[in-house]
Length: 189
Image 1: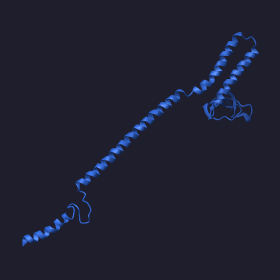
Image 2: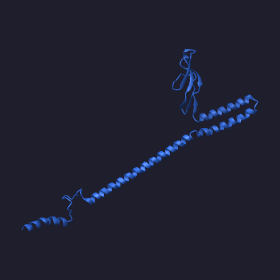
Image 3: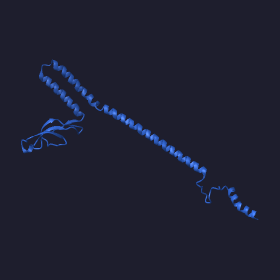
Image 4: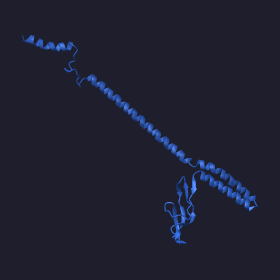
């Protein structure tokens, strides 16, 4: 009889196997985490994602390195050719100066020489102003330490002149409204 009881107890287990229920599954039908087949596929997925992320990272790092090199090269080229436009425009002025030098040797009329030199200077100033160079107008204005560099002080002729620029020793200049050289001035005290 003991044998018969054992067979009855084994039948439900065998029935479960016959019904296609895996021994590693619980009653609710969920899979155990210890399933080696499923763990390997999940591990393979994670490895593939990791490899993909590493590949993206390497590509991004290489792309950034290429960008950095390219911008450094472009910056160097820009620095080397920064004055190219102004030099090209000044070549006309140099040509005029060379023609003026030739005329100096044979010229006898001083007034014509003065006019020629004056034309060359005006052309030179016009080229520079077209590039954004603008001289400061400082004489008679209030002294401003942000714009002017005081060389010396002189006694003021009257009370109105005190603290104002009396004379300009060296012109100050703006380039596109940014100071590139401060005016050296004499201030009335």
